[in-house]
Image (cartoon, rainbow, N blue to C red; front, side, top):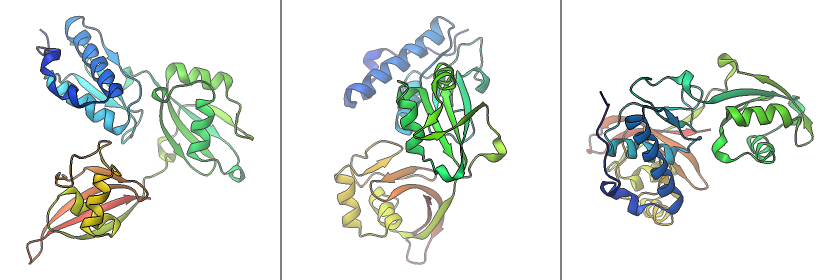
Length: 266
């Protein structure tokens, strides 16, 4: 018994508002869903940004397709693959073609995320073949497609001028913990311009200007206007200010303003 009836491509009306790259991705995801439903073939994308992962979920919802999983190699990954699973293979993290490598180096080399990513790109790898890169003082845990990991193990001996060691896998207990700075306050509503104004301590007018200029992204996408409402758990970035998450909605004040807690990634 098939998991879903697939939608016609003509019914995916949201495709008309996408740029060419996102439209191509949406079509590719639709193909993977149709292969899973009609050919019993499980298929995966490469690593997706947060915005493109949201697009993948939108396409799956348009097809009423639920036999899917988003996974980046560990819980809480930002860059994830989309997996469309056949009826004969339920969603499983172990099925994803992801391999983790741990690069070790001297603390004094002070390597950064940009250094590691640049060296991987220098091997001819695509951005879609590289997932999260988790940095600490003397190591980096990198999540890659299996093929990309084989290339890195074979060809990468240095990052910049720093020699590195490479081991397969990673120690979950040593993964860098995400740290946040909490920003508490009240807003007149959960409109994005109101929440951004609190998050970066600016006027609502300034926040609206940032939205209009395309400097604000919600889950990787530009909102149509500052009037878009945020929900608890939504992430957003403000160019030049950083990445945030609407951590909690904490009730109302005596003046009927909404109490919220925003967390800034640090």
